[in-house]
Image (cartoon, rainbow, N blue to C red):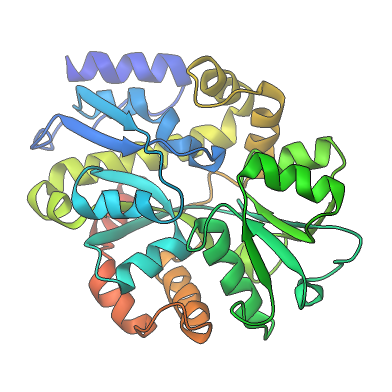
Length: 327
């Protein structure tokens, strides 16, 4: 049955028709992942059939109403088992003692900073107003790291106001705010509607283009209790990441048809904009160290990068999969 499921997945995607049959089955067949309104999490949505081929029969994508970092606390609480997560807020939660483990890097280049004509560079945000969904949210944490990198203090130099993404995009169009940090499909929509202009594109601009923005994170107890399930889940997500790179049209159609996205054109553009399929090219530990240092400089975390790495990462599954998938 496992071989048949794997063959079915291979027929669908034309890739990776084999499952490591020598491995024991996952210790649990239930897997709960996060559903979050950002298309850069596409690999874990595409991974559903690959997860079934890995032996998971009860695959749940759970969505929560909270803004900010509440989704990450759900991983720590055990309500979510494994999920892609943004690096900056993940580091903040590890610093706060939330029991989550970063397991593998997935892709770089998801966030973009848009500005009005008053903002041509990141340093121009000094004294300006930027909208974020909530203080402590992914956009706020990322922008705090970006500001620290150019010598600005997010607590003093920039005024943050809380707005929903829809309201923030409208405010940017009307010039009521000066900047907005967007995640797919927001940047694709803003460019299509010619609202503002990109000030920073993490897929293109160094140093951000050299570090992961999304990593696989797991609940610590789940990872320790179910190592085979963890390995299989990470493998499925990394394979799905490659699928996003190789078959963008098919992935965009699948995400739209299954309700993970609402606009096919923006979804397809996201698949083309985000550099999927490069999880082998960068070191996730370097990413954690880089962002932890920026957030420490900004006063957003107290722990050193070494402490964050020691208590919040586990790369053994990634190291095994690098060898297996001939990275």
